[in-house]
Length: 164
Length: 262
Ligand SMILES: [Zn+2]
Image: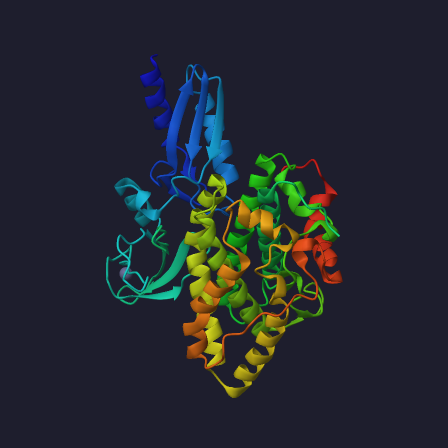
């Protein structure tokens, strides 16, 4: 295999590494993978943490190291978490947004209002008639909302932007 | 008194790390006790973020060769700590395992003042001469945005609510402000820290904080408080007895098995 093949293969493997708390999105979908460097048989993967206190980071790190090691021509794997560039919620891919919706989580909004407030539609029925129940949800990256149309509570990924 | 490190980045990192570590610990003691379930979720989420911020700083210290991050967080005695007095104060009477009689007004007042002060520091750190610290500040700032929103809402709503609430908030705020003497202090390392352009000076940040909170204090019709000279300066390792108790509780599990991977 050439280095290019190896890199492709690594990205394929990374797409199988799911968020331990949301199994419909991978670390690639979330835009957490910044760089994959191959030096001979050694691979360094630079990752961007979503939230700095996210307890899933260690699990993700372990899962990536184990999985990428199985790729042909890879001997050792090192995962580094870096802050530059900072992870922002607009790094989530279109596929990632679909995956979030499947899980019942509204993808983060694209736009912030001037006062910093934001709006998302219901991930189940797409209704705009939703209310914010709690800006803070079950994990650091999620908020809890309620859909007035289909009467379902749902979660949304918080927008995270350097404008904040 | 505590040791002063040669490298001003180390001094500053310990101050930032210990501040968030203790603030997060005091927040975690509220788990299950907040006024309602939504608040319990929100407060513990903020507490978790804050411990994440402490971890970021301890890891930077680890990178500078100061020791393993977990050890720096849990194993340093009170005499070596550089946090401000404000964050080490207990939440109120009693202990959370028995009959806690914690004061929610105090939690709101402390969290609002601490978080706004943190915001001013983080904004300044974004232009730090230390590249890693500047990058960490950008990351932390995005999370802090939600914390600020949260504590500002509580702070204003309780002050502008019933007479009882206002009285309790007034008392709580006085108690908080009395402990703010070292909040913006860099202790004995101040000159080195500012000369190295790691962060702006104490006075610049203090003035900026005053401007920043002014609109909120106008909303609650209270004059913006001024901080006095500190009785003890936490940045120099001068602390209350409660700090060692807090560290003992917080590190209890870690100390049971120093070799375990948590
Ligand atoms: Zn709906």
